[in-house]
Amino acid sequence: MMTLLQTCIGLALLYFLASLLVGALIEYIAAVFKLRSRLLKQALDKMLGKAEVVLDYELVKAATPQQVAPEGGKLSGGAKALQAVSNVFAGSSSAPSYVAPALFASAVLDRADQTPQASQLVALLSAAPSVQQGGVAALGQELEGWYNEAMKRWEGVYTRWTQAISLLICLLLVPLMNIDTVQVAKYLWVTPEARAAVAQKASEVIKANEPTNKQTTTPASAENDATSAAVKQQAVTQAQRAIDDLNLPLGWKDGLSWQKFGQGWQAGLVGWLLSIVAIAAGSRFWFDMLSRLVNLRLTGPPPETGPAKS
Image 1 (tube, rainbow, N blue to C red):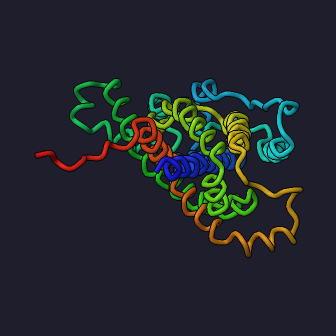
Image 2: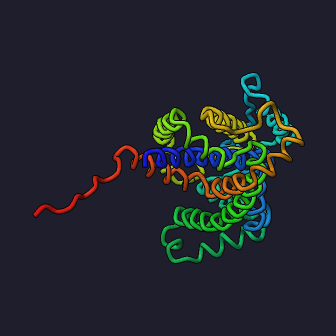
Image 3: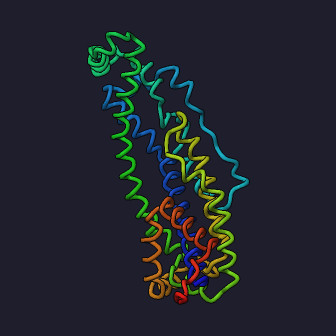
C-alpha cells in the first residue's frame, strides 16, 4: 500500500512541477510578445475609441515601471537564449499591461473631450441617479465599476488564449524533456530510495507553494511587459531546476538527436500521452491532489476492523 502511495506522490509531484513550468513559459511568452499590453490597448480602443486617452495620461505613465533586464551572467544557457529573444521584442517600450481602475476613471474624467466615445460614456454614467446625488466622486466610482466589468470580458479572451497555448506547450515540452509517465512509474515502483526522496520533497514543495496556490489571481500594479519578462524568465529557470532536482529518469542521456527521438517516440508514446494529459490539467489541480496524497501518507490508512467478539 505504501509503495503505491509513494509512487503516486512521485508522479503527482512531477506533474505539479511540470505544470508550473508550463505556466511560467506561458506567462514568459505573453510578456516577451507584450500580449497583455496589446490586449489592454485593444480593449481601451474599443471602450474609448482611442487607447491614448488613458495610456498617455501622465499619472498612468508615472505608475508604469520602466524596462528592467535580468542579469544574464546568473542565467543558464537556455535562459540566456530566452533573454536574447526577450530583448529583441521588448525594445524600448514601457507600455503598461494593467491600468488601475482609479487611474482609468481619473484619465477619462480629465480627458473625456478627446474622443466621442469617452464623452458619451461620461454623459451616460452621469445620468445615473447615484451620480447626480454624489457628484464627481460618485461618477468616478461608476467609471471604475464599468471599467472592471469591461476588463473581465477581455480577461476571458486572454484565458482562452492561455488554455490553447498551454496544450501546445505540453505537446512540445513532454517529448523534448522525455517525461514518460510509464518509465517514471516503473522507476519509482522498484526504487525505494527514490520513492522516499520524492515523498520528502513533496512535503517541502507543498509548504513552499501553499500561499501561492491559495491566493486569487489579481493584477497588483501597472507593470509593463518588459519588467514582467524579467521576472517570468527567472520563474522558468526555477521550475526547470526543481524538476531536475527530483533525479527521476527524465530527459535524454548524452543529448537529444533525431535518431534517439525516433526511438523514444516508438517506445514512449503511451507514457508521453499520459504525461501530456496529466500536465495539461494545471498546477492548481495537481497541488490539491499532491496535498491529499501527502496527508494520506502522513496519517496512514485507517486501521482494519476485526470481527466482532461475542
